[in-house]
Amino acid sequence: MNNFASSLKNKSKFLIFGCGFSGSFFAKTIRKLGCTVLTSSRSENKDPNNFVFNSENGKVPDEKIFDGVTHILSCIPPGKNGNDPVLEIFKNKLKSLSLEWVGYLSTTGVYGNTKGNWVSEIDKPNPGQKRSHVRLNCEKEWLKSGLPVQIFRLPGIYGPGRSTFEAIKNQKICVISKKDQVFSRIHVADITNAIIYLLNNRNSLKFHQIINIADDEPCSQIEVIQYCYSLLGLKMPNAISFEDAKNRLSPIAQSFWMENRRVSNKLLCEKLGYKLIYKNYKLGLENCFLDS
Ligand SMILES: NC(=O)c1ccc[n+]([C@@H]2O[C@H](COP(=O)([O-])OP(=O)(O)OC[C@H]3O[C@@H](n4cnc5c(N)ncnc54)[C@H](OP(=O)(O)O)[C@@H]3O)[C@@H](O)[C@H]2O)c1
Image 1 (cartoon, protein in one colour):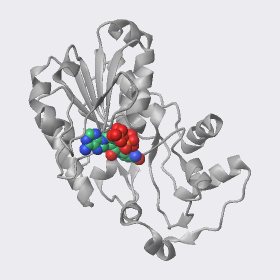
Image 2: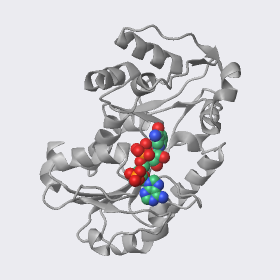
Image 3: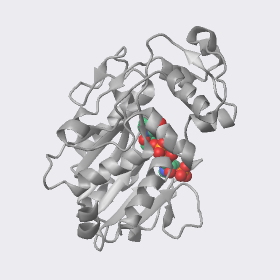
């Protein structure tokens, strides 16, 4: 991290489109390294380094935000019309800049249902849900853009302030059992740190345009919930079967349960040598617990 800080600190300017959960964690971290960072949100806020961008109502920032930009990270999902909000509005502008790097946060949903099997970047995407088809199209648009793009495919993102603890606290927890069902996940700090690691070592590592960022241990949702209850010193409610629960779930929640895959991180962690901070949900949840 130190090399990165010293080599980029005075000249790097990041624009982060979509300063939500992952974008704000990234912004906070990269600022600590000395980089200039501007972020977007859909409505005004008090942060002087924030600008308003909303592709749905045409709210776009003044072009001067692009002055001196070297790096872009887009954390915005596809728009209602299926297009990528950033490319739809700014593609030509981005192409006119001398960008060193563009990152795009995508999802492992593009792999579809692998019936619990491992899936890696060399597997052909096989989206099952409409939103995953749309996402794959956005990925293709980024790859076609001619920009120096790196796509990060992410499974369920959690971290302090957004984890099973919040679901328990807000009484939104539903303990569902479904035989052999697993989910992959990633702690928000590992998304940020993996990207920084890749940027920091970009001269020595082979450049890959698509990289999964996932932890080492996909597992059932029940294991995760059980672990949270044990950290809280509480008893987990009885589980109900997916068949009994499914009609109570929103269509989007149901669709998550229809796909079962284990996302491999071998490219990132073995080939490229990134060391996860939170290699499994237990370590990640302990961090969320201590932070809460
Ligand atoms: N959450 C997950 O578990 C998960 C898993 C895999 C992949 N992903 C994907 O990874 C990316 C980052 O995830 P996240 O959970 O960190 O995202 P998030 O917290 O939901 O933040 C999304 C950001 O995009 C902005 N945004 C949304 N629609 C927009 C539009 N039409 N025009 C302009 N800005 C818009 C939001 O603005 P406001 O700040 O104003 O709300 C927010 O800053 C997203 O693409 C997400 O779909 C998420």
